[in-house]
Length: 326
Image 1 (cartoon, rainbow, N blue to C red):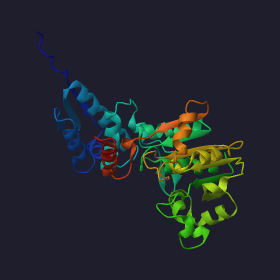
Image 2 (cartoon, rainbow, N blue to C red; image 1 turned 90 degrees about the vertical axis):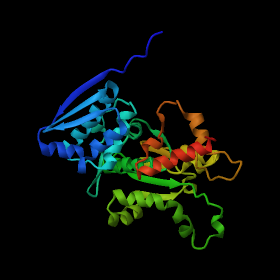
Image 3 (cartoon, rainbow, N blue to C red; image 1 turned 120 degrees about the vertical axis):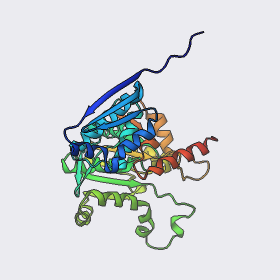
Image 4 (cartoon, rainbow, N blue to C red; image 1 turned 45 degrees about the vertical axis):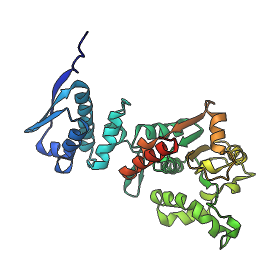
């Protein structure tokens, strides 16, 4: 009977250019060291001047080394090492994607009002690249994974680069228990709550004072899905948000509005369908029918891609487990 082999043990030393360089990498109050101790309890981490000794099981040492080096690279590029950044980097490394987070998290594609917009996870990077490479991209995933926000940023980027002449943002106006006809106000006032999330994202990326002018001249259009019927949308970047609440007929109608020199992004969360009981989701049907066709991509984002408060991804996972009887 053979005895189980002990995991390979390894020791490495990581050197920093200066004490300040080390402090920038570790974050405030040596936050990184505390995170590594929590994630890899079998590791021994010791600071010696401007060097860091890491020893323990080889697999853990390898992951810890990549985390430290990626954060060091981000710090040297001017990124502030916050708890959120550390969490994003450790998630990428522990996920085993092989992607270097120092390059991923620092590669912004749109600067907006003093902030840089960039993918923050490997799946978000794949989503952004898919939008660049395909005419139609479906972005599926739970709330907070950046589906709509990143699509909006790509639309603004395309408009600024004159790749398209206009941006069209649309959603199905599905009521939560009330019909629009019974709600007070004009049609515009009734519809506005369903479109508000699109306006909010738009205000993050475009100077607010320019939005009325851009909407008045048709450069940016925000409208309910029903307003797309009978149109051909040329030279446009078109985003359909909350697509899980389309019927099959509505989804087919939308997709066939595609005109020349246009891009479409369809986003939705198939676990949050608000359609009447017994009505199938047009998003589910479209993915089933169209996935695998040339120039159409389907990107699935997960709870690990949630970039809101760190508790949001845990909430998503807890509900997912509950819904599946876990």
